[in-house]
Length: 509
Ligand code: BG6
Image (cartoon, rainbow, N blue to C red):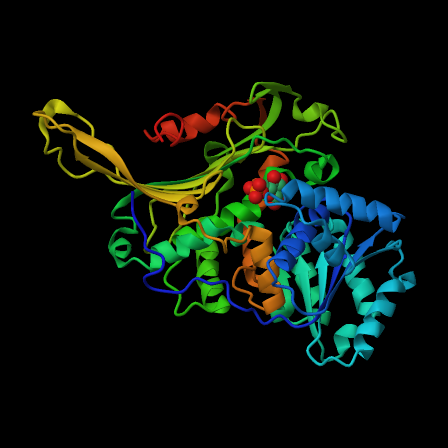
């Protein structure tokens, strides 16, 4: 076990954070994302005494709902998430700051409620106030909501305003470009927080600290020493109650275009000149720009797509994708992706990156495995013909850990090299300041730190990367069925095995 004495170098108190008074307006306020992630995270920040200032949370939705209904839904979701003891009194205190408004946003001109809230905000005497518009809605509603915000005329005034956009940002390159243009009519780029909750996960951020805080890694973090890289984002859940959204988006727009590419860029980026948001995002962008475009002729060879059929997850029978609610019988939407890509820059040229993601797979697992080349000679004779290659493994979920696998001599009179692991496991830190992804990102929004959010040029570039895959998924690539509870489409094994490699974790992790 790699022992870390956390107290030796820094003090890790979650210090007093300067957050000014704020109004937090959530569009799609009673939707799944808001009630399961955003509001519980705001509550947790409140509980940790992070929201000391005056604040109001305004939930905006289309459906008529009584205050009691909202109260019950929110309380139920917080109770589900709250692993520590639920404090009703504290919740009541928090809930006093919440209100719900319904309005039909189909006719933005007629939406007056937001205007009255904004007017109230404008007339308040506090100088430090900030207003946050959080769009937790599907992409097709975004432009209408931007219109409603524009109609309030708030953006013309020099006030502290921010807008948070959930992923997917647009539905393709052109729509993302258009959306960026629309946003820029009323907001500046440094007021736009494009969410990708994977960037808020501790272990994803830790990749940067691990890479750039340990000089011993730098000389080997490149094509001369790294054989290949694997990134897996596998889920056991299906599409749950999100049939309508999912069928329009599928795995490529839901996971690959955002979470997968963001992780990839952090693994591969060069050293930023400093730790400012733009320096980091500049380097990530260079990676997106260097990803080799997959030619039409190679797409079938390098990309595998699938859709889950029925099967068993953790011993329970589950239905196939086509039997899920709100899914058309002839849907060709992919729920599984496996692909091989290359980054054509000095550091990574020639190193294959194998990426796979899917729903209803065998395990919930997000991990990145860096597999190093074998030593040039087998010095240890015939006792062991193959030495296990060194690996660095970042496990993002279900556990949060970083492992380095090395070889040592197995005790005895034979020359047996034996693989062992040096492990850093977050659960051993016993940290009381661990924030979940949404808590961390919401805190960053309130503080005004853009580092963990996607910039305009990044998001457009990421759409350019997936464009040929989306096109192929609508035509040339066959979407193959796989059984729920398996590791996805069989061809994804061949994709890597044909290169004489195999997916990590199948049996050896
Ligand atoms: C979301 C996707 O962005 O990420 C979901 O829309 C997916 O389909 C989820 O289930 C996975 O997030 P996590 O944090 O559970 O890995």
